[in-house]
Image (cartoon, rainbow over all chains, first blue to last red; front, side, top):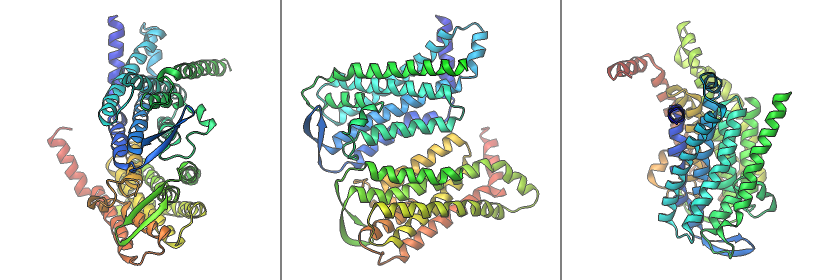
Length: 246
Length: 240
C-alpha cells in the first residue's frame, strides 16, 4: 500500500511540475465558464431533446454546455500529461520492482481524482448559476463525460510522440464536440444524426436531461456512455497489440 | 509548416460557417451610430476569418521566434543587430502569412456576403500583422513551446470571439477592449461586411498599425542588451 501511495505521489508531482497544467486545469475552465456568462444572447432557444422541444434560456444552456467543455478539457489534458510525461519512466519503474498494474492504477488514481475534483467544482458553479432538475444526474453526466475524454487523452498520451500535437488534437476535439457541435445556441447541426458518434454526446444528453424536463430519465444514456468507453478501450488495446506484433 | 499555414485557417473559417446557427444578432459599432441586424452565420464567418488569421499568424510567429532564440544569440555574436534579425525573420513569415491571408479572405468572402470586400481584406491583413507581432513578443518573453502556444491560442480566441466580438454581449465595446489587438480590425470587418467601406477609415487603420508598431518596439526593448542585463540582475536579486 505504501509503495502505491508513494508512486501516486510521485506521478502527481510530475504532473504538477508541467507549467501548462495551470493554464489547462485552472485558467481554461474558468475562462470557458466566464465566457458562457458573458456571451449568451438574451433569447429563448428551442432545444430538441428526446423528441420533445423545450424552450430554454440561452445563457443557462451555454453555462450547462460549457461546464461540460471545461470538465472535458481538464480530463483529457490531465490524462494526456500523466501518461505522456511518464512514458519513459514506466520501464524504469518496472525494473525497480513495480508491476504494470501498480503503475497503471497509480496513474488512474491521479486522473480520476483530478477529474472528480474538477467535476465537483464545476458542478457547484452550475448549481449556483442555473436551476437543474436533478443535481446528482448532472454530476454523474459531468464525471462520465470527463471519463470518456480521459480515455481519449490516455490513448493519445500513449501513442503520440509530439506533445503539442497531442494537446491540440484534444483541445480541438473537446472544443468542437462540446462547445460547438452539441450547442444549439451556436450550432445548427447539433441534432443531426451523425453527431451521435461524438464522444461527449451521451454525457451532454445526460446533463441536459438533468436540467430540462424531456420526459426521459436522466440515466437513460448511461449504457451508451459505458459502451462507448468499452469500445474505446478494447479498440485501443486491439490496435496496439496488432501494431506491437508487427 | 507551410502546409499548416493554409490548412488551419481554412478549416477554422469553413467549420465556423458550416456549424454556426442562423440566429439574429443586433449590435452597434464604435464609430457608427447605426445598429446592424445580421445573422450569426455572417458575423461568425467574418470574425472567424480574422480569428483564423490571428491564430495562424500568432502561432507561427511564436514558434519561429521561440525556436530561433538560440540562433538569434549566435547571430548577434557574429555581428548582426537585433533590428536586422527581427526584420529578416519577420520578412519570411510575412510572405507566407500574406499568401495565407489572401486565401482566408477569398474563402470568407465566398461564404458571407460583404458590402465592401476590400474592407474585409484590409481587416484580415491588419489582424495578421498585429498577431504576428504578438506572437513574436510572446516568443521573445516566454519561448516554451507548449505554454506559449496555449497562451496565444487562448488569448487570440478570447480577443476575437468574445471581447471584441458582438458575441461577447456584456463585453463588446467596453473601453478596455479598445486596447486589444483585435478591436480595430474587427470594427473595420464588421462595418465593411454590413454597412460598406468605413466612412472614417483612417482612424481604425492608423490605430491598428500603431498597435503593431508598439508591440514590435516592446519586443525590441525586451531583446535589447539593456533589458537582458536588467532581467539577469532581477533574477540574481531574487535568486530565481
